[in-house]
Image (tube, rainbow, N blue to C red; front, side, top):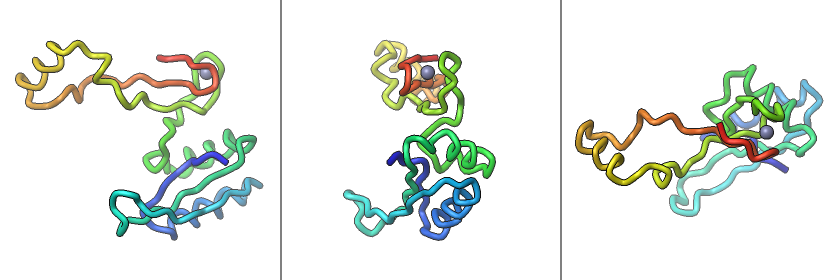
Amino acid sequence: MIQIAQFQFESQAKALVDELAKQAVSATCAMTRSVTKPARVAGVVRVAPEDFETAMQVVIDADLLPYSSWTGVACPQCHSLKTERVKTYFKHVPLPLFLLSLFALGLPLFFLRQPNHCLDCGHLW
Ligand SMILES: [Zn+2]
């Protein structure tokens, strides 16, 4: 099973599961507890790998992309929707540039566009 979205409330997660059921996608909804903050729970929605593309389309149509760890942007090379933003991008930036932006702007490189990464073919863009 692949996680497609994570919500703060179980009702939100259940609503997405209902929406997926309309597209004949069977999804599971599980409440998980944060390891670091046990008081915080999250409704995690997962689908079978073969339903991933259909499920992502539902997430995109329902404007739920902010709740997904996936970008919802199709890979330009293999057209897969299994794409994510590269999270650790600081190490790709030379240290002097990082420090310069930190002191000049007071912000650590928020203007840098994070590249997307395709999990199916490994393409970066
Ligand atoms: Zn790809």
